[in-house]
Each structure stands twice: as C-alpha cells, then as structure tokens.
Amino acid sequence: MRNWILVETNYAHTKSAQYEVAVLPLGATEPHNLHLPYGTDLFEATILGEHICEEAHRRGAKVVLLPTIPYGTETNLRELPLAMNLNPSTLGLVIRDLVETLVHNGIRKVLLLNSHGGNDFKPLLRELYGQLNAQLFLCNWYQSVKDVYHDLFAATEDHAGEMETSFALAYFPELVAMQADGGLAADDGQVAPLRFEALRQGWVSMTRPWHLLTTNGGSGNPHQATAEKGRRLMELLVERLAGFLTELSESPIDASFPFASRDE
Image (spheres, one colour):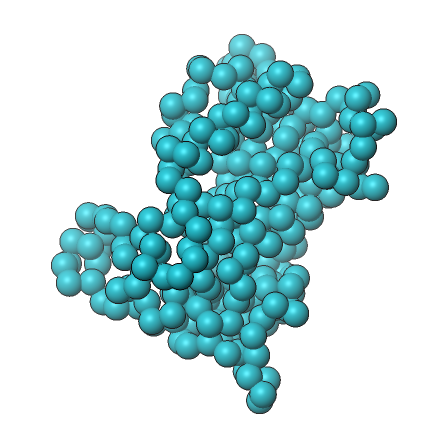
C-alpha cells in the first residue's frame, strides 16, 4: 500500500493519518494526433502525481494524492469525435465540492495539478478565494519547465508533440501507436496559420477551433520524441514539484501565509 495515494490506502490508515496537503490531478479525454491515446492528459496527471507525491512523502511531507478527474473543457474540440467536455462552470463546481470535502477533513492546502491546456483555473482560484477555508494552488505542469523547455525539446507547440510523446514513450509506451518500421504513426502536428497579425503576435487571443487548427488533433511535431527525454522531463518535474509539496506541508497557515514575514 502506498499510503500517499488515497485510492490505495484503507480506513485503518486514513482514520489516523494527518495529511497536510492534497494533490488533485486534472486530465482530459480527447484526441492526441493519431498516435497517442485519448487518455494522455489523464495518464500524465496521474503518473506525475504519483511521482511527485512519492518523493514528497519520502522527504517527510504529509501529502495525499486524490484520484484524477478524467474530463476537462473541450469546447474548442467539439467537432472531433468523443472529446468529452465539461464546461468550465461545471468543472469549477466539481472542484469546489471536492475542496469542501477536504476542508471538512482538516486538509486546507490543495494543489490543482493540471495536465490539460483547455482548463483555465486561475479565475476559479480568484472566485474561491475567501469563500473556502483553504489555500489553493495551481500547477499547469507543462508550464513549470518553460525556462528549460528548449534544453530538452526542439518543438514549440505541444499537444501530442515532442514533449507529450516523450512522456508517453517513457511511461505508457504500450499505448503509443507505431508503424511497422518503428516510427510513430503520427502526422507532423502542423497547425494552420492565423489570419491576423494581432493573433500571431499574441496581442489578441481567442479560443482556437481545433478541427480548423490541426489535421488530426496534434499541435507540434512528435517525431523527435524519445523515452529518455520523457525521463529527463520527469526528473526535473519531480525535483521542482516535490520540493514545493514538502515546503507546503511543513509551512503553517498563519496570518501572512503564503508570504514570508517582513523580518525574514
């Protein structure tokens, strides 16, 4: 029994456990080019959550990993088959209910570990601030390595691209579709160019319709992906995020939390 994973533990343990931090992984069920499974975001969130909570537990953190929510916001993928959508308002209500359950059980520090780019939880954190007796944190894990992204990967966009495919090759390779010659059964992940300069430069943003943006639901070239790159990515994520969970577990919720006192 890995007693930092809620679904594996039992009441004999949890009735006396004093967890300080809960990690709620959030995934999606959607197409990922032709080669990755619909559950890619679900698998990533779950596997990453297991790794970072294991290391944080090893370092002494009182942390518990919750089951991954398998659905995300898919409104811009609605024209692709079986992209299973939860509207942001619906997803927000689910998260609120789960956080209320945690608070009722004395767990007031919560990390939302998000693996789906279509989920935008910052407005939810603002809405819930002060409404629940909890401290909520958000990690879009794919953004937490932006400073070293190009030390690992060549491609820039990544939805079923080099980064996600490397993760899959390292941790669920049996679900990656391959050709007879050993190459990936995927297209190059090219995306349609935007018509307007303001959109290209990022001065203006929009929700991009995925059936017009991509050929097969992939954004970013996956063909330079390797399992070794996936393992290096995991090592970096574990070092950064397990360290945060450990610090969070040890930190009391006082009047200045999460800020340092002015005397430090």
